[in-house]
Length: 389
Image 1 (tube, helix red, strand yellow):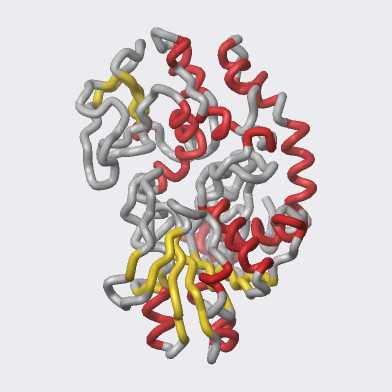
Image 2 (spheres, helix red, strand yellow):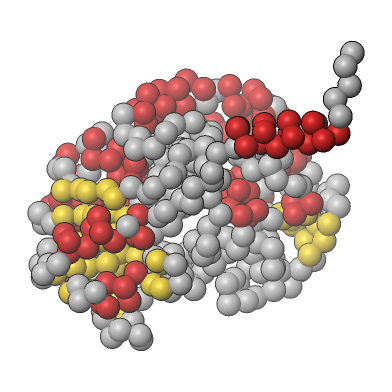
């Protein structure tokens, strides 16, 4: 066998790297593509549906619109508020933005859907919110009700699309509409693999709006994005999703919100652990404390025994799993006190509780979802803007 000289080997490696490497193109969220939507907003009365994620680089979209002399009449905001600093479940009050003195109308509290009177002086609504691609993350419900209001009042909705950090797979039970609520309005899996723009197209196309009315909808797409892309969020999407680890774990751990288990709320690592004062076979302890992000966490000031998921390196823990839920149930002392009624809304069905109680494995449970997921994938495919999985 002929042995290549080191210099030739180095040259060959360099050639292969040069020949096969592709330049990595930066993903560009739609908000940054101002030339694509600013002309449509000129001389129009605009409402912004957004929050702290509505950014163009380091500048808020609202400031950019005002600086560009676009007439922003009012702001609508979802759960967690316009500045994203209100804890999950806390009512968001209608108020005034301190920086611009523009009225902020809450869509999480007294009402979820804009009133006709709140849209009467508006021509176009612009929506720019970073979603995380999970059915029970409530921004999808805000989208549904805004689309309904726009359809009923003949207003146009422009969605500035953003990448979905969990769009590289699809998993979880499809929602049974018997259990629909503000944490799940549509028959989709827990992880559905679509951007919020694609999802809006699906809402329109599948006639999920009230009275089957279509919303006058325009989606401004991202650039250089596909459903295989791994996108690092530059801003927290909500107070307790503090990093990518928590965002990847969120689909699995948020199911604990329908149980007696704490998911790290009241710690510096929310949605990266779970525990309970009486959980057995744990390898980690922590004590939830009240904080700005979690004023009244479950089991506040009590030592919780659980599992520290920060030690599980990505990508090993970046997809939806039932293993932690099954583990916690098996090691919980009083099985009757484990689940609460909210779990049905989060899981979207009545079977998962029974499957876990009867000791089915994760593999067995996931097999029962396959038919529903396969049907959903056919629906989903019709509305994709970006290269698929």
